[in-house]
Image (cartoon, rainbow, N blue to C red; front, side, top):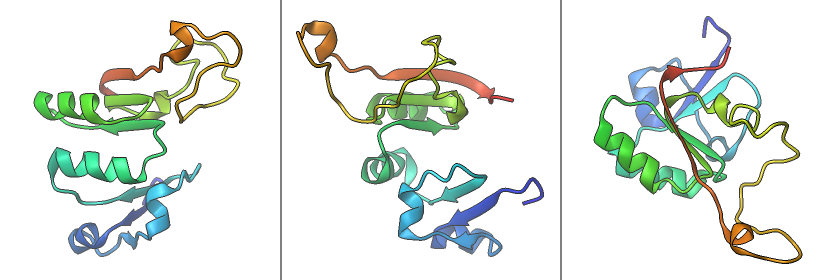
Length: 136
């Protein structure tokens, strides 16, 4: 709060901290483009993966954990273009990955028009492992 971030949570989160604003169904599918964080309490890594599978755009997801097994499962099973372990989702950027400037962001699975070879039929999943890294 002191940094100007709004925190929204489900009932379980609000039971821990009543100052947290209530989350709505729209909060789980909204990209705020603002300092807003929505938090849902889930049952372990399986619950997190299920929540992501239901609400994610399929673009970028991150796990913060010191448990290598939980991180490995998350990175393997989350179906998103970019998955991160102990790194900020701010790294989900073509420039950060050395691809140069972006012309768009793809969250679906599609291939190029015209002649199609193996490269055009391939989708990629980028895995980032960090140690609490964040962009300035």
